Length: 296
Image (cartoon, rainbow, N blue to C red):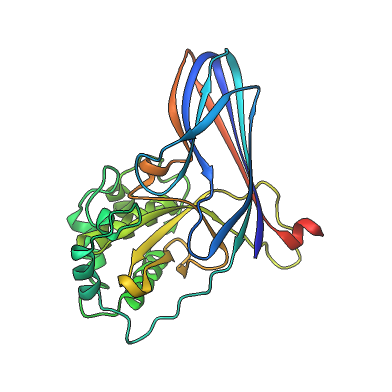
């Protein structure tokens, strides 16, 4: 499947911003099952951009510097991504969770995709005994890794309620867990908390998911949003396998990875500092369009 993705972020400032320095992680990475065909970044009214090194995780980082006073700022990212990723098929011969944990501990992969980087708590996903105990019910060490992963994801999908009003971007996993509600970021963080507590390497994936409208209705342009899910390293042969606890499904042909990190804080689409007075309003519009729909 070929996707055209348009991601627009607009900032309206209460007072003139005299200077801003931001990190943009809007360009999808190249990952197993997906390739980036084209990418364009537009800043209005103006801004100076240059490539920057990802300080953590796997991300394409662009540094944006605004040096002229602005009251509005629009950041538009346009990508074309080819996704050729099959639905994983669990097998009785998959490595068990105990084998995965052992292999991760002895891994000598120093790259940002190395499993050892994702074994331990991170600033936004700390250890939590309650979440660990709840997830452990599905994480028997002798259970095949892929079977355990999808079972836990589906349990989260069934027992938690999607509620955009329940949490904020900085809500800790424990609060969402107690409420039994939240958004995709919360469900991913809860699952990662449980996996890491079991000694398993689990990463936070940020990106997009294709939304399919009800039969007979057109897809609403601009109504999509960024999405978050989980990657579990399942041993040297299986590698990283994606599971989506919000929807209780595998990462497959409808998921496009933008960035991978230990938690949201490492790979937020936009972060940085601004110098100015007054409040700030942000509006985000995302459109994920399969190429056949664009052609039509």
